[in-house]
Length: 237
Ligand code: C5P
Image (cartoon, rainbow, N blue to C red; front, side):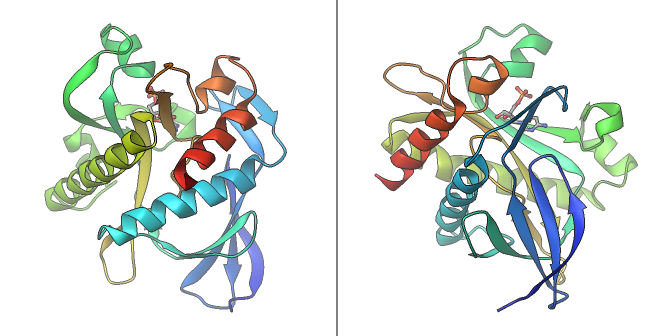
């Protein structure tokens, strides 16, 4: 059992703690909600625990389908043990349906089904506002080392999308889009890192169209915790 040591990083949604094992970290899920690059902020008691449980379930599903992830195990309500990896400084976004920044940027009507899953990269940099970049920018910025790494990340992102899309469809939820992050482990393999939760995905109820994700907070659509609880209820159903 790894022992928690010093705080090594605090992000918007999580704190990362060192452990007595140099290869393992503890991720602590926070109750903070942020949107619009930190401009809108709130606290929602219990949100961290919900995201920890939801993300653990989804990573477990993905592992069972052959996706390598950084997750080792859930430790407590708000904590999980993860393998240390070098985070690739990219937000990898996969979209099945147009909405959000895609609709704003390109004028594609909200709710339009895309003809194929669209993979986009944003450069993780708060000062620059996480700008959208292409494959060549990824190489120029040294965000990834080789074109093969880009291909691998795109391939994994699409596999994750296929697995999650089918899973959530069975639960009556449409996986509209999501963001994932990858890391490079000690063996040089690209693995899924960070979290997958309603903070980083869009879920629309297939029957009613109701939004059950962070858009509830972004757009003041109601009680965000109730929405996240509903996502967890569907996952466990
Ligand atoms: O805002 P946008 O339409 O680009 O978001 C696409 C997807 O990526 C959404 O599911 C959103 O929750 C997620 N995302 C995220 N973190 C960001 C930006 C987007 O999790 N910084």
